[in-house]
Amino acid sequence: MLLGGTVAGYDGSVRDWERLLALSGFRAVTAPFNYKTPEDTIREFCAAAKRQNAVIAEAGVWNNPLDPDGEKAAAAMAYAKEQLALADRWGIPCCVNIVGSAGGAAWDGADRNNYTEETYERIVQSIREILDEVQPKRAFYCIEPMPWMIPDGPDEYLALIRDVDRKQFAVHMDFVNMINSPRRALAPERFIRECFEKLGPYIKSTHIKDSRLHPTRLTAILEECSPGEGSLDFREVLSIIDRYLPKDAPVLLEHMRTFEEYRKAYAVLEEQAGLAGVAIR
Image (cartoon, rainbow, N blue to C red):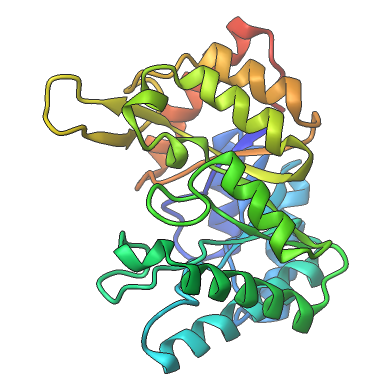
């Protein structure tokens, strides 16, 4: 696998981004640009990644196509289309978003309307519209699973793939986001294996992080954390990923704030990969 993450803490210049990328050891990174970035600057970032033997694996969208405000939903859809077109133009394999929240409290929030039949139909139609308008040839539009919206499990993701029925719709794997119950949290590696068994052929990028259940707090409290700070056995997790995905599959750390936090998390996974006999670059 190609282990990496986001290059955090650079000063905005391509030169500083490349400097930190070289120090990070990352072999896969998130795009440090969007469709509004000048083409010459994008070209410089891509060249810098190539010089450091890294791939730009994901272009993020991160907005709410289901926003109850019609103007905001339309703007979110337009941005998703532009980002997918950007990814396709530059050969970035995964353009990733969430499906969005049907409530107005937060773009990525839990809402009782997230699971209605009407919302599901909107999800399917919004993904189809994005793909049908852009018609990507190289990039895939992918949905990151979330704990409280579709898809929140591997079977739900398979159903979404079937119902969207578009060749360039694929999977962004985030198994920690789907560890959303004590049953899954108490046997996480078994659940992670199920995710990769079922979704492996469709996966274009994977997020890797840790998870912990607070065992004496009622009701159940689950939270994401950095590798080594939770309960996941990363020797087994990395072995599962290595078994089900191609050797050049991008696996990305996320949600750290600083370069140092990313390096610390990377070092944990680097050590565990060595113990598991898994190549990470």
